[in-house]
Length: 131
Image 1 (tube, rainbow, N blue to C red):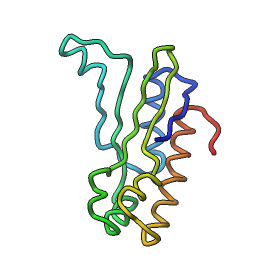
Image 2: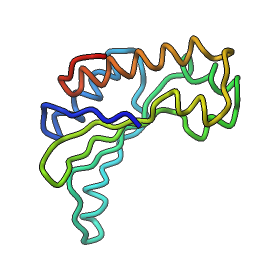
Image 3: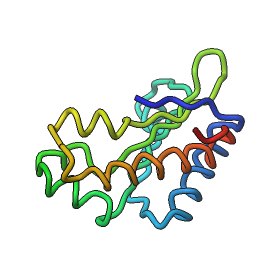
Image 4: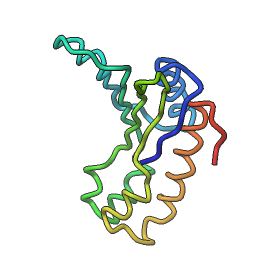
């Protein structure tokens, strides 16, 4: 997992995340507001929102290398606030995805692009220094 501290509120981080995803030519497929879902059943949850995103150009080569990787695609990012009030952006590390599904050099370029894209998106969403 990659976990990046955000300089912004949960709402601003999620908004910036969606903007960064779109700016990088990816699609946002769904947003899941876990906090609202908890409130709907009478439970409390600190701000927690899941954003599901991607595109066929990035994901297809990975699934061509191992179709079962589709269980982990499209990509997901979680914006959440911890008990101390810090805001975080979390996503699966693409290297984990490659290891989990035994994806080798055949999808290496796609994995490299995914790593670079996620780092840039996370930096834009959180105000963190890319790297």
